[in-house]
Amino acid sequence: MRNRTFKKIAVVCAAMAVFSYSQTCNNTTLYSGSENGYMEESTRTFPEAPEWKANWGNFPMMAPPYIRLSGQKNVKGDWRGALVFPQGVAATGATLSMKVRSSQNVKFGVWLGNSGEAFYKNLSANESYRLEIPVADIGGKGTFLLKKVWIGLFGVGAYQYTNLFVDDIAIRCPERSGTAGGSSSSGTAGGTSGLGTLLGATSADESDFIVGGDAASPVRKLLWESEPLEETSARYSTEERDELKKRTPMMFVMDWQDHDRIIRFLQSDSLTPQQSREGWYKAMYLVTNSRVKDSVIANPKQLFADANAIAAMNEMSSFPLLLANLDYSYKVCTDTQCNATTLENYHLLAAGFPTSYTRSSKVRITYDPFFVTTDKSGLPNVEICTSGKCKALEPNKATEIEFASAGIQKLTVKLAYGSTRIQQTLSLEVR
Image 1 (cartoon, one colour):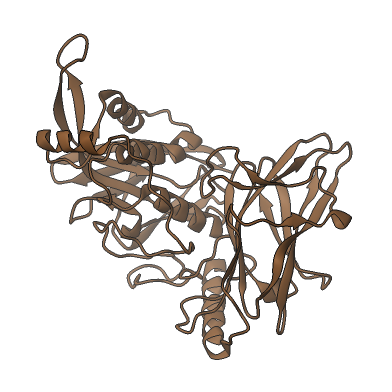
Image 2 (image 1 turned 90 degrees about the vertical axis):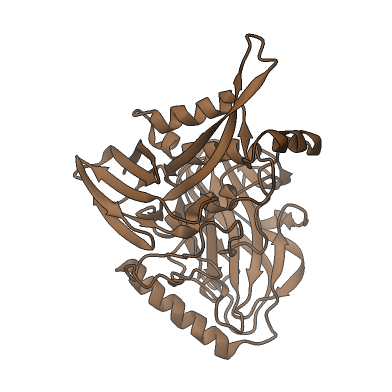
């Protein structure tokens, strides 16, 4: 019901944006790792000043550099401060977007002034969130010039060292086409083409976010970002690629150790929820890192980030299944020193979840071709099984899984394409 209401509100907001569009809004990137700003010292209560170009490694949806605010206090309390940017930005009718991540469970807030209107979101430790917040909902009504963005953490525990990471702060304006606009402030990962709107999902339940499209195409529409994420770096030089092309028509050639890592993920029946979440992404990293040709399949990094955002928007209770269906070769040593190798072909079928947990006993899983990375023209058959009962999951549709209790739950995902059949055991924590 919440998703259905969210969808209707979003559609109304998008429609209103079409008719009220004006030049008093400018699409502007306030921060994306290269732009500078500062935090207003007179009002800062964060224990430490922000590190404006921090690098603490890659996180889901976030790559360095990003803003880092951190510290600890000897009493429980609230931390806040205003991020000030070089010049004011016209933001009438706009949406404020940003990515945030905290090292502790904490309440996060965003506001623009003294109106008393703010956006709040409970952040789970070590989870990345993409936020889309209508400026009008946080104090930016009427003709509005945005000069600073207040952020805060509330109820931070005593003697609890906390890192807050903030990245990709931007102003998004309503478009004339009506495909972009605000999002409900009760959501956490709305988007420019999302807004809870169904994109070509005529056969799905109206509350499901399904993008659809051609899974075999390496190109994906941008759901939230203004630019696509960069592909995983490639391990082979131009000369090495040319040599491998003489040995195999495959577009990916892996070392046997990397192939073995993927097989262990696929065959394990004791994965933790976090391993279930990370396994698909890590497997696809190994594949794309070993590519012989660029732009063969959809960027798994982008699909993983977008799937995570949709899960966050639905409070982790509804999300797409991540799928891989492709061919690669892997090297097999033919002598004890491994000075010579032969190539074996392998057809990879793999599934994964974009989240390690859910806060609901009922979970909806969608089969969205948008989240399939493949070099095939067809889609694999999918079944999801719990407690010995299996449900077929068809493209552009969803299935609902209900768990009898909280805790770590196991799910079996059966995949089939042509003569290839696999069965994976994934787990999900019900909180």
